[in-house]
Length: 335
Image (cartoon, rainbow, N blue to C red):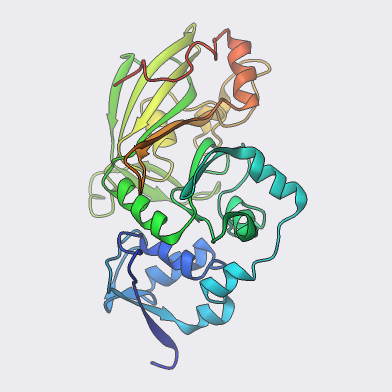
């Protein structure tokens, strides 16, 4: 077996990273789907133990990796330095999306419909574009968190592995304050509240999604908590809400709003959201990562970035008589 696997030690500066992100930093061309399969089947282990993809690593941990991965994907440093360049248009797009940048991190305003990472049949994505811009950033940029393909707004990227590790711990300890804006079907009652509903992953014809955990599913249920606040409303048919996730589960905001009967407009994963019957409202997900506040990984200050609403949401706000310029920031809304 030893000729088919290798053991890689977690180095200084990598402690605190999730296993899946650590693997992708080492093997950038490894797809998320294949990685998840290797973890589930026990082919990737930490200190000889089966683990989950979101397991946090410690310095000195020994990660067991099948050698076939190295044959399919060169080591991280070689890949980063020899990464194929991106097109002039994609390079220009990334530059246009930057909201904030310093020596350690930068923040992008992700547009609608652009995937963050690659997967089955997904070849154009932000991670790939960044990999091809090593000459611009001086190292291989590393995603600190992810957004769904159709969610817009703030996406935090670390310029170095050390910065990624430190920021990973910030998210792990829930020291990052994230605020999303959404347009939902109907008007939530009460106007401010908390959704605390455990979620489980489920497969379906529209791909993976999450749903409310049922009795007997506690072993695989994921605790999830979201605070919401109604900012404004368009009669009884729709509401502009501020969403503040405490936990960071896949599709958490989309699932939680669906659970309380107010799905996000344009959400084709949760069908009630795609059935919003208002003429001329675009059939696109109306969910936007509006603001991120977190401690800087190396300096004694905060990173505080706000992303403007995307065009399709601005048009919907205008259609419904909502004033998108009412607040420069949403700090008036604490829940």
